[in-house]
Figure 1: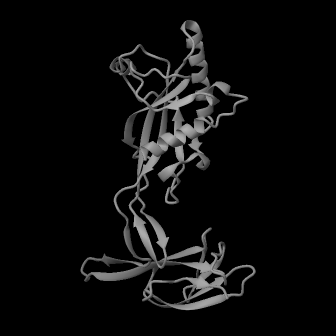
Figure 2: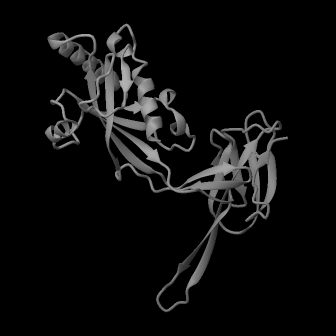
Figure 3: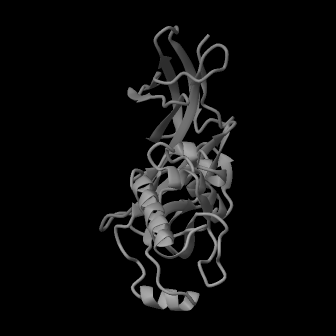
Length: 281
């Protein structure tokens, strides 16, 4: 994941407009440790990943369900991870004040460009970061805080004199463990106990399906009614719908969409086939 984040940041930086930020557009992008042995052969923006930690404020504990055929794959809620980089610039081909000026100019252009992206646009994402299961955009913080409380110690550890730098923090997602596979129906039992009364058990079921046209393509924006309850849901962009907390028994699904004849289907909840799709004729 971290190498895909590096590739994403490199792609973003190299997309800087040449007319406005020419030095950044022509610079090399590095992720090496900026120690005494780091001597790039051309002007370089170096993003050193020095800290990785969980962002508990942004973590959503809700599992992610992915529809696969007539079943589902449930993925544990991913960790939200803050990846902290220190950004430095390194000039080549000049010396003395001219080199310092070139490095400062390149640092300013990198800061200007990265500050334009409160979240990283999807067009720059690479590798696992393009997963359709990703639930949030990748937020960034550019030069807003100094997460390193002892910057002097950092440069001492690198074995070089302190350099001008800014900090970049990108929050990404880290999947946890293998997914759970099973039918699309989930059943939960709840026990209720009142003083002086025996415990009673209530069973409810959640299920979902997809509305498709005669050719098998999903139909987003369809209205799906569950009779005799009268409950109504609207399909999402992939034609999926879902009903929660339904009692076991026989029902009828009725689907309606512009340009299609109304269609109905009798179902049992839970459905033995584990499939609740509705298709327009």
